[in-house]
Image (cartoon, rainbow, N blue to C red):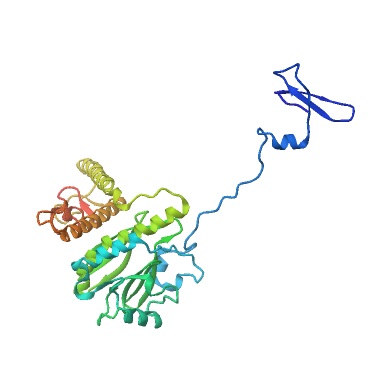
Length: 351
């Protein structure tokens, strides 16, 4: 037996004895197996069991899910938001937004007509297949002609069930390591589009509607949908121990990044143009049209959602002198953060 801190000797019977080297005249102690096991310096070989973080919608694809709900596997594990005070406050705030709820194009829990919900679930209009109950439906974005909720979007604790133009689809809050970060809207040809942006800046077209009253509501609902999506992210962080950061805490960072990328790209392209290395394709001035980065477009979507939410809260205030920090809707700020995929470096033309 060996140990740097002790002297050891073995008797004729094979028994071992030890004493501390710091006390050479000290008493010898009989060594037993139990002594080694109880020694504080011994190594604990017991393995700690570490649980794996949950994986939601494993093996599924955003584009397929958006195309057809049949790609939602029957045994799929879905990230589900727990109804709590935070959800209730968001829905309460949305219910008081008259620009959102006008013409009853957006119905909000608990004020959704129970009769409509029962018919939707019983007739399986959105192919929910028993996954959700009445209280799991927090919003109906109603595209139907008779305002009965037969087409449009069900905003639920598990994600968005979509029924529009013959398409039945489902968009969960999270697929594997990707999640919905923000919602925004975009003007289409005689229509208004509801767009979701993922954490990797990929965009999903959720709805494209030509219904006039709904088009106006779509512009208002994006901020509230972003807050609900953020609660899904918070739910996941609580489950896994990941640090949670409120989505709108990144507004200043997103804006600064957007400005920085714009300045860098403009400077680089201007130099190349002067050297004759880039041929202009701007229909307005003949300058260089560049693609807007996905990060910049994602940052703009975040800013648009925050601006709409701020204006909504100001409109509910009893203080007549309170003004939104983002100015009026459709003003200078909105023109700067509008979603454009290509921009001219010379004259600022966008398309």
